Length: 253
Image (tube, rainbow, N blue to C red; front, side):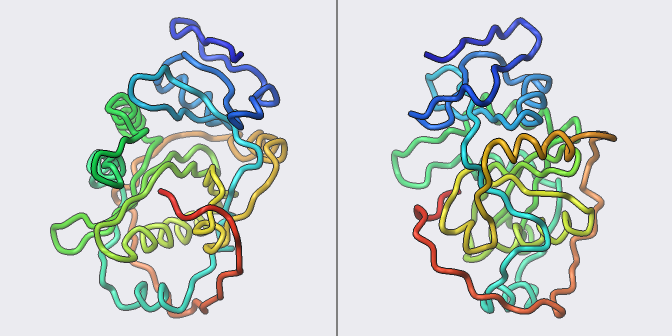
C-alpha cells in the first residue's frame, strides 16, 4: 500500500526510502499539481507520472539517471549537425507547443502520460519562470525540442520530441552546453536508457541524488524566463567521443 496525499493540505511527501520496489519507485498517490506541490516534489527527488483516468502518482526512482554538464558525449555525426547550422535553437518561445508535441502518442492509438492536466500544470510553472523549453526550428516550423524544470543548479528533464532527424539531440546538446556555462550541477534524466547512456548520462543511487539536491537546490531559487538567452554556440572546439556499449532499454522520450 502507498499513502494517499490530501490535495487540500500543504504539500508533504513520505520519505523517498519508503517507495515500493515493485513497481519500482512508486511513492504515493493523490496530492495536487499546483506549483507548490510540484516544486516541493522535485526538490525532494520526486516527480509525478500517471495515465489518463488514474490518480496522480508520485515516483522516486532508485537508481536515478543523471548527466553532469560538461560530460556529454558528442558523436561525429551529431557534431557535424551542430556545426552545419541546420536548426535555429531558441529558449522559452513555444513552451506549450513543445509540451503538446511531447504529449502526442508515439504510435497510432497509443496513450500518453503528459495529460491535459499535466500540460496546464507545467505551463503554469513556465509562466512563473520554473519550467523551460529548448526548441529547434527550421524557418517558422518547430521540428524538435524538450522541456523541464530548473530549480537551483538542477535541471529536471521531462520529455523531448523530434519531427526531423537529430532535432531533439541538437536541443539537448544546446541545453547541456548552456547549463555548463551557468555552472549547473546535474541534469536529472530520471529513467535509464541506452540512448541517455550513449550521451554520457550515468546511474547514481537515489540516496546520493536526494543528498545532492539538498546542496544543489539551496540558496537563491529565483525563477527566470529564458526567452532572451542567446543560443548561438560555437561547436568548433568540440571533439567527437564514441558512445560506449550498453545494454539498457531502448530509447524513450
